Image (spheres, rainbow, N blue to C red):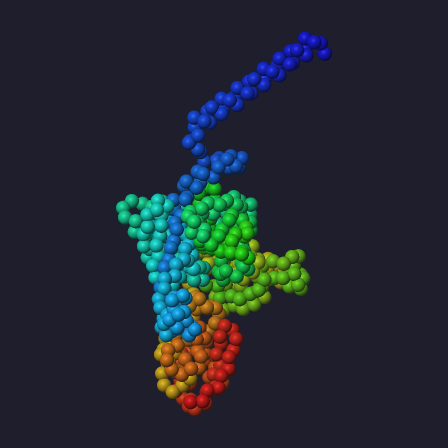
Length: 479
């Protein structure tokens, strides 16, 4: 290479370097003039720049919730003395004293008129609910309705004229593990806080938080006070209501759970339109297919739910499902346990249909199942029990699938359920609301009419069998 050629190369490199440097300086100058003009990221690369545009859109619709509850307390006899009264604020002579108990949580405005969704445990048993908006205005909220089975509640505030900012529901069935999400709430009462993370897992059904939910798991930091807050995607859509955390010390360790938006939407619609959530009825019992079960059935891997019981009025039975079948998927979504199967049903409104993929004798088949409300058969026929008998003072009614769902008990349970226990022999016997009267003197009790008939005829000694949470309790009573 000649000296002239080498010199030209050096000149070209130098010129190129100056050109690139000029572009960089121009870009920096241009960026400085537009420092306040942030744009929504349009690619995954740009997402690394800032979540601020998403937060600006969503944060005004996330509220802080403060609740107050008046409770009575009673000190032990040690504190009845005036000396201890001065130092321990005890109530003299054991008389109850009221005190105010406060708690905090979060909520999400889902409608411009002031409709708010939160967790039921945030507002349960409260006497007053205060909602603090993003702009620091405070309003007292009224409860529109609650649903203990899903731990959700709907509130309403009247903020006067003008619409409130709200978040639109996203489709929680479209998210995938690894998607970026933001959690917004009021952890520890420090004020609105935004944390980021990813969807760590889907369809978490075995965490013991709810019988009906199939939770979204995230590593976005969720702490006490975040309950009821928003889990949003980067297109500013609500895909979950933050519900609980897994923690050993009370704080976040990166395992949080949110109720999916598709379930939240159905529950909210039911509460707003009818005062309570009415879920589609399955009328089925089953178990997860384990490795051992899969091997015994000749399956290549564990999959689906093995049906063990079917109610004859069940829409699944009407659709062709039978005991011994394996439900592998619902509307294309795999199910792995009974709770996951229930979740796929309860996220659909009554009146629609779902499509099942079912394995029977090694063959795969498709079934269409109509979604129906739980029937109220038999009628609940609520009765007050009086007279000289061991159930006197209790209020009972007939269990039906509809009444069972309303009471949040197993919809397969039948018979006569105890609703209230007042003064009388029933209270002495130790009856509790939720107990099911299984037998009296060897007679299986199926309805309130049968119960009344037995109580009228029998005198003297009574042999009573009570079903309490699936455990049978046998008691002999002499009156």
